[in-house]
Image (cartoon, rainbow over all chains, first blue to last red; front, side, top):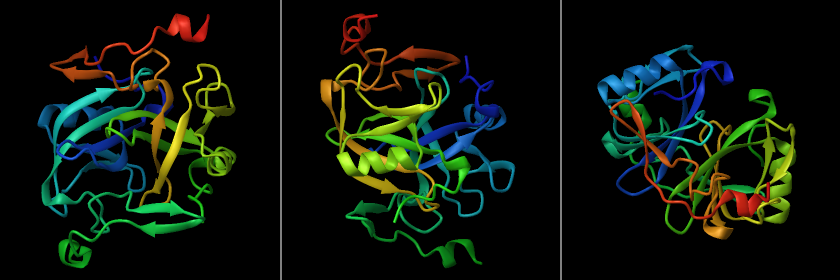
Length: 124
Length: 124
């Protein structure tokens, strides 16, 4: 049993949630290859739409996601991962969550503080 | 300021989370019209990909989502809504969350109990 990768050109959205505090960390995409790699290794793998390649989350930063629970939705075409996030932050910007900006009266307000400095983590 | 509806053919994924208990309820999509309607009314509106129309969540069941907080991700192309879910269940199947099945050793295991009977709510 797998999600239905015959839908949406084989690319399904994946919600990633911190299993410890319930925070939604990011949204990514999986194709069947990324699903298989994730199920096999217990480490979150996604399909990078921008780079068009398989992506082990944390391969560069070391901020791997250990997958503890995997859920699928009623239509079998969205996935929810509950993970332990190594390094405490999922976002390449250095925030714990990619959703670090809240909409407030037509403005975006930053609601988190930086967990790491991206320049130090990515050495770029 | 809005999410970037110039991306992904104007259709962005929306993660919906129960603000009271942190449960991820569903994944839906918004186009700019759905965004505007949601921001204007405080009730979650989505774009139904199957019906190709604007969709007020709960229009048929009465299980409306009152939007309390809206977040956008680092790329401005994914949205997170924190909502109060009227009726206690977001899924048309009658479960609180659309993610009511967990992957376990190659099988899907139902991890929730029904909140309502879909036949009674939808009168179909």
